[in-house]
Length: 379
Image (cartoon, rainbow, N blue to C red; front, side, top):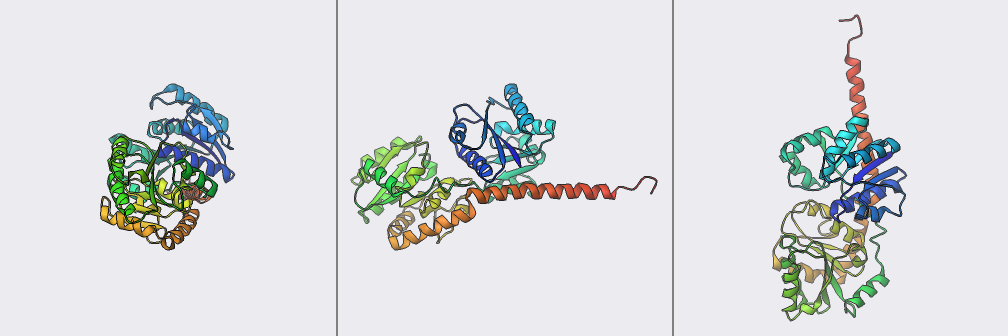
């Protein structure tokens, strides 16, 4: 099967990471994959040395005619069976081009906030397939009036090879952070803002450190509240056990340095890719029971779901997870769970199955409709 994926967003976002993983998954499964991406953006960089065919374009907005011209030219050259879009500003261009070239269109929606009213009503109906990245997101679209039959769920694929635990990398990263001995490292990866629960996590982790002398906290990321968090750590007697490497374009090596991951959001998340990646690296996850996060783990098996914002509950869970007899079996179960449910080959196969099944149902419906037409000369 041939796919043409449109992703000209140059930024490092969860949708961009999903786009890269899906393109790689389809290519690894033996499909012919073309990608139209922004020059120098994350998508182009990460797909540069793969089997994916790269083309460059920019969409400043949905009316950018130069973007249309590039997509039309590339689609006529590749002749894909499906056009695939991941970013809002490219939804309408794909719908228009798909209609012009008679190529079916797949749209992924990564956000729960509603689109503009007209787009929210028309796009799921005009696209041949409209995918939400979690059941939580799907429910939100249905509550806004999208018919249930028009929204499928397809989770984010995760490249297991990128997340593989590397003890040499672990030692190197810990040394660079002046962490020695046999530490237990609680990791956080993401945007540092209040809605991500970073202050709840700081208070809970610091209280746990008073009970667990081997416990350290690794804060990976940046954001509007990063400075306030660093200042809070600097003012605390145990603040030297909080470590702030800053933003990293590639966070995968840091999973090897962690013993467990915290996902403490107090605002709903559409999904939670970092939770799945951490489990792929063999890490148990402590996560807030909110939004789409519960869909990323098996509570009590690969991690623990906790009340958002409850410092005492988080402190207790962190202390409990410092026990290797609890932490290590969960980490092993986590890796197996992700491999069976979220790995690239599983998601690619699921994606193709949903597309072909939909096409078969559509063709069957058309065939039945034609059979019901009366023959010429008969009433």
